[in-house]
Length: 501
Image (cartoon, rainbow, N blue to C red; front, side, top):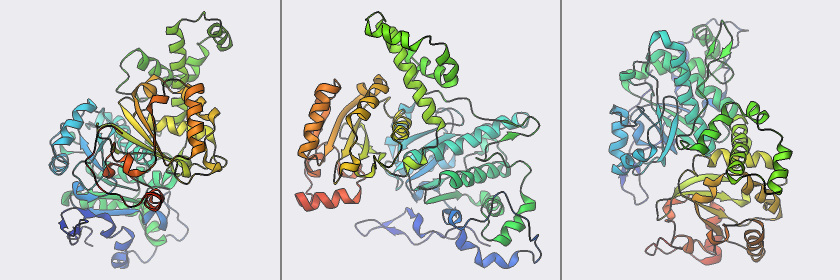
């Protein structure tokens, strides 16, 4: 069976010109390729046998196997495989650099590298994909096989975690292990497929398409192993069962050492920006938050000392950082997929000054129906790696009602928990389509409840006004926001942009 058909006819850009990028919606899905090959299955199968990866039509509909260049995919994000300094020259990365343009290399220099098993996000620049997720696969040595398996699993898992956090709808995977790093293709394919499968089972609500972009030499391995993890019928499930390896990982696909039944996991994450004392406190708290909390001493006593003015500013800062670190630790451990599926907080492009833009959609926050503590955890989880650099927030107040309004107590709690980087690096908060009541509430909150935020808030009556600070192509708008603005303020006309609102 031919899994990698010739490239589909060129897609068209908005002006009608042919594009060399490939629209993933036009690629045949994994399930679509089954019918032509179904007659090759054995006639006799074990009728009562069930695979640990059972037939799931809904999951199969998300999978695409495509022979081609991942850099050409028009998906929300594509994956780049590189080395620790993010300067590797392999066919995948070279093609991505070529199509993305020179700005990508400049952006990669700002990331200051990436450790094995980790993943980092950049814009897609001139690619059809909006984002690139960069990761570093392990160097393979047979005597350190379990460590290599754990690291490769972490690559795939961290990529998918970023996709979930950013509410991405599609991801194009390259084959992460490169020839130079020596990971056996068959072993690596098992880890890739089972990790994606388990992730889609548990957290796959927002992810609509996963494309495995393979080369001609890699295609056969994926063609052989995809039925093991993504069987397209009950017959194919039973037929594939004997070919599954003995080690299929745990419930998330993570490698397990059978003789000890312990989980092999990556070293607890340490943020690349936390090299100062503040970062050290965060790392210590993340590695052993509960034990660390027990060593803090009497918290009530410390609070009394703060009120009496007897606790030094440095001690107060450390105490606050420990508190934030515990929240971050909990956020990393919680399943927050239900909050992510709301698509109320997501990263979009950059403003005229090159600062990251985070979008908040008020209408998508059903305050009375969700666990607001989980919402707070999700905010911290998403924002922790954003706030290490300057950023801006665009809050869409458009068509919100009383069930979407965040009360001042919640906002005060959030403001008190987050660390100094959030406040220092937030350069502007654009409040889009405010009402008179929301203006009054915002003024009261920023005047009497918190300090240092009032001058950063800009009320934006129309998108035309917002576009003087953030180019329209740099913002992913909810459709109802565009419709409302066109109805209330008329169609948008392009004017030269200015760095100031």
